[in-house]
Image (cartoon, rainbow, N blue to C red; front, side):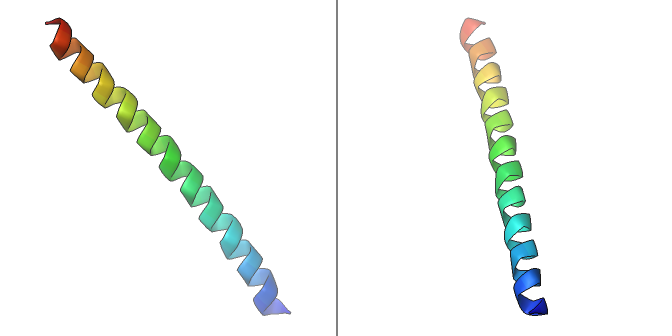
Length: 42
């Protein structure tokens, strides 16, 4: 039984990591688009 509980914990942790990674990618895209827009205007 302990093995099953540890599996659920690791699964939740993996989902949280994926969420954080998605947020980081979104922020990076926003920064890159902002910089590209500034260069395009100038």
